[in-house]
Amino acid sequence: MWCRRLSHLQSRLQDLLRGRVTCWAPQQPNFKSLFPLAIHWHHTASTSLNCVWQQHEDHFELQYANTVMRFDYVWLRDHCRSASCYNSKTHQRSLDTATVDLCIQPKTIRLDETTLFFTWPDGHVTRYDLDWLVKNSYEGQKQKVIQPRILWNAEIYQQAQVPSVDFQSFLETKEGLKNFLQNFLLYGIAFVENVPPTQEHTEKLAERISLIRETIYGRMWYFTSDFSRGDTAYTKLALDRHTDTTYFQEPCGIQVFHCLKHEGTGGRTLLVDGFYAAEQVLQKAPEEFELLSKVPLKHEYIENVGECHNHMIGVGPVLNIYPWNKELYMIRYNNYDRAVINTVPYDVVHRWYTAHRTLTIELRKPENEFWVKLKPGRVLFIDNWRVLHGRESFTGYRQLCGCSLTRDDVLNTARLLGLQA
Ligand SMILES: C[N+](C)(C)CCCC[C@H](N)C(=O)O
Ligand SMILES: O=C(O)CCC(=O)C(=O)O
Ligand SMILES: [Fe+2]
Image (cartoon, rainbow, N blue to C red; front, side, top):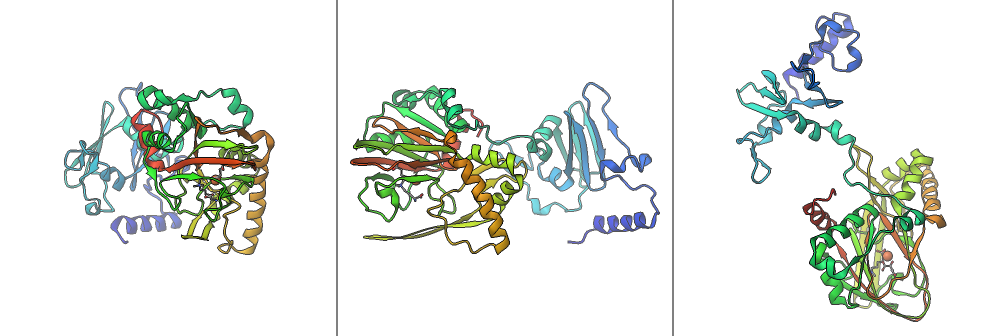
C-alpha cells in the first residue's frame, strides 16, 4: 500500500538523516527535548480537566486521566458514533470501513468541555467523549483484566469459605444464580447443594446457566467403570490432574460432575488451580512461562471401541494469554492426551520440556491440591479452561453423570447479571 503520507514521511526521514530538520513533528516523547519548537500542545482552558492533546502527522495523542493515549486516524474515523456511521440501537457499525482513506487526517480538531470534535476532509464530524476514549483506548485496556480472579491453593480456597448455593435458590432466584456465578468466575469451581441425584435434575441445573455442549461423549454423560469408551475415565484407575478435551480446537469451557452413586472406597476428586501454578512459573521463571504460552502442541484422541470411532486433534499452547495485557485465559494440560510433538525444532523441544517440568512441579505440590469427595446431591462445576481435575482410584460401583457447557453462554449469563467476565 503506497500513499501520499508514506512518501511524505519518507522524504522527511531522509531530511532528518541528512540533518535538514526543520519542523519534524515529534513522533515519540523522547524527541521532545530534541525539537522543542516543533511541539504544539493544546491545553484545555480549564486546568482542572487536565487534558492535553496534540495533532501529529499520522496519529492523535491525548493525555487525560493520567493516561497517555495514541489514536490512529483511521481508527478515529472508523469508530465514529454519529447516526450515519453507527446504529446505537443494535450497537452495530453502519460505516463501511473499506471506504475510509487509509491516509485520512482530520481537517480540524477541537475540544469543547469534555468532547473532542474531529472534522474530516469531507466535512463529516466525529465526536468523542474523553472518558469514552480512555475506556476504549489500547492504553486503557492494557492496564485492565478481562476477568478478575482469585488464584488459590488448598489453604486459600478453604480459608475463603466459599458458600455453596442451594439447588432451589440457584434455580428460582436471581441472587442464587448470581452468587453462584460470581464464585465460579472468581475461583473456577463452584458447588450446588441439595440437588436430587438424577440425570434430569443435573441437566436442569446446567441449562440454568448455559447451553449444554454436545460432544462425542453425548449431551448428558452417564458413566461408570465399564470400559464402554476408549478412555481411562471409564475405568477405576487413578487419574492425575488434567483438563478435559484438550484434543478439541476449543476445549470444553465448563465440566459439570454429579456423582449419583458410589458403593465402595476411594474415588475422591482432585482439584488444582492451573492459573495459580502458572502464576508461580511466571514469578520464578518468566521465560519458561513465555515458552509455554508460545509453543503450539497437539493433543489427540483416537478411539475404536465398539460402535465408537473418533479421531480428534486440537492444537494450541499449554498457556494461552491475551497478548495486550498478558492475562492468562486458558490452560491446556493433559499429559495422557498430549500427542507426538513434531511441530518444534529439537532445541526448543528441550527448553519446552524444562518449562513443562517447572509447571508440573507447581501443579503437583501437595499444598496446591484440593481434594473433595463428590456425593449424590452435590454438583461440581469446573472451569475447564483454568482448574485441573483428577481422581483417586476406587473400588466398587460408582456412577457419575454430567455434561459440558459452552463457555460463551456461561459468560453471557454472567454479564447479563452485571458480573465482569
Ligand atoms: C467426562 N467424560 C467422562 C465424558 C469424558 C472423559 C474425557 C476424558 C478425556 N481423557 C479427556 O481428558 O478429555
Ligand atoms: O471419575 C472422575 O471423577 C472424573 C474422571 C474424569 O477425569 C473425566 O471424566 O473427565
Ligand atoms: Fe477428566
